[in-house]
Image: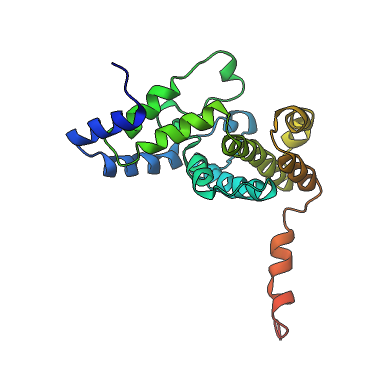
Length: 209
């Protein structure tokens, strides 16, 4: 008998709540290595750190696209990579050869928790049919370019080598005009500008005296 994700969650929650176990599991995402480390050879954002900025990027894109459903967008951003707790992060080389069962991973993660509704949100994200899903996917892709700018600031040579690929993503993979506009603006930005402008020499007239 087929049951919806919501009904499945309700039936499973009756047996035993896994809410606390779920909190420990999502905390373990800080220890899941990103596939980028193989290619970069340096530390990069963890899955949790990536998802945090994706949430803000998604909100930013949503404002540009005049989409008001912040609640759904934030939920999608929070869970868009959550399956990596059980599947690991499969990189762009590995995906040519490996297929992960993210649907099963997510179903087992949410089983008997208070977050069963998020399985449906994630399902919507994966199918890219709604405006919110397209916005969050654009944010997911755009965060890569933000991090590449940060790596470039640290003297890494790979960002320049990936420019052709990233331009292809900008031209062919983004769903929204706002994401493409943000990508163009990002290329001109100084990674250090936010703290140079906010430092005490600008904000405190008596600093250093």
